[in-house]
Image 1 (cartoon, helix red, strand yellow):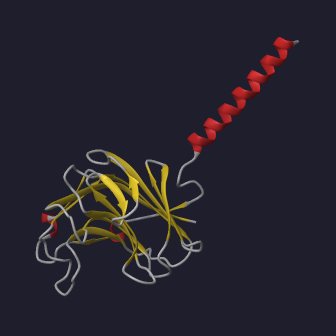
Image 2 (cartoon, rainbow, N blue to C red; image 1 turned 90 degrees about the vertical axis):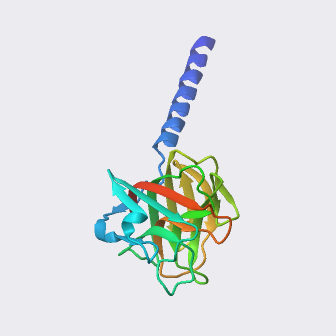
Length: 217
């Protein structure tokens, strides 16, 4: 009888553990979201105004490569902003709902002091979110540490913005890494690439992106 009870307990424990593993394995940041189709027209490229796009951007075999130098010009002559080569997701600006950006990023060693993902738009200021790389680590602007050891490898980036709750959640490689309040309402849209930070930027900055997707609820 004791042996029978022990067997039942072992079976129950095994089932509970299996279900727990399935829940963990099955969880994904995009679960419950609807994919928003993107075409070439939705990728609006910005680069230093005085040079050809081909000198700061390449798209080959599904990989978008963005690079910029610390002394480059801004994206237009009358702008006081820092150098950038970025793609702005065009045609899907939002001011309500729950939206999600996804992409796989690669940052070469040596690139530092640069924003690789943004949510542009805010009640005050220009942006709601900037994810920057400093010495191989990702930070929220220049403050909170989000993820570490990101140089020279592909990593998955998911950013969820729940406008109604005023919350932004960042996932790296499917793992929730950071949650923060947003910066209030605005005309909001996602960007990725390279945008030099106000200080401590390396001379050369590069990021590569593939499988860029947009989702919403």
